[in-house]
Image (cartoon, rainbow, N blue to C red; front, side, top):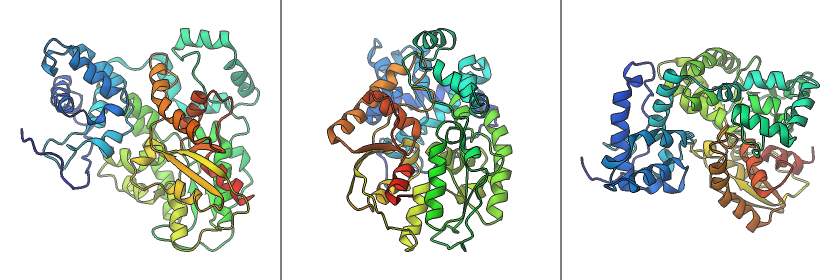
Length: 443
């Protein structure tokens, strides 16, 4: 192998190739893990990211030879289990990603290993339930059921039983469910009658992919998005008939379920796009799913590529409006000091710190961006076996928030914000950046 360090070219991603039989060949996957892990062992730039890398390096350092060849390969599964596919190693740390000749794609190698495990063993009842977000949200948000579920989740003996039965850590902060969910709140909403105005690549009217979490757990976030966009004369409506974006199933390695969700969502989104609507999703992982993961799973699907080119992060969209002189910058209310955790799935989209930049336009507002992982990642922070790891990962973020002593703290990922609140010992969740923006507008 060449010893050449990484070059200056931008990272490129190869298609996942998940439909080939080789993808599920365990011997070939293990050989690729040997190759990649040996390179990682000699580099170690990613040690400060998720616990996948410390687990790998400890495995090597505890071997008789202090090299990968002497490591216990049965522990490879632990390395895989601690990767939650945030992609930060690929986008921000690894010097050996394509087009480098070594072509390291650590997250997708971990995804391959997860997919092989899922095909061989399936998933536990807990993981099936926690990743079936659309079904879980619909059931738990039924009137009175939501009250019962939310109340039960606050009872210690119930949580202990849940830990014993399903492996959900009894101390983990679990989301509240709302019977007054997003679609109920906006059932009578009609898009504004303003004439859409283009700005950069945006066409000036948006269809909101509400997301499972945004619909059933944090509907205020979606409602605030609609109010803020319409305040900026951007006609806004909800996407009709959406299902989960597929990210929870992707992280489980259940790629067939990802494909089934894609078959439902993509036609709905393409129909809206062809009718002149841009697509917005308020949660970074959902945007990333349509911008990156599905296009890499289905590189030859023209409709998937169409959605990729027409879906935006909300603040990315607003910054396009600002650059075109179309953003309303009349803010009657300041926000004071805002500690802003930059969500991993937003950082790897390479759009820059657009949320920070928009919030910084508000007079009397100081924004501190914290570019550290919260450690939540969907189910990682609630599973019994990984809860303590998630709490360790969030500590640096909590420390920076406490040191800054902000008026408000926030994250584009409401799950990350909730986990930070848990680390701070707060009972209430922080306001989403869209909610802060609505507050600044006074609407």
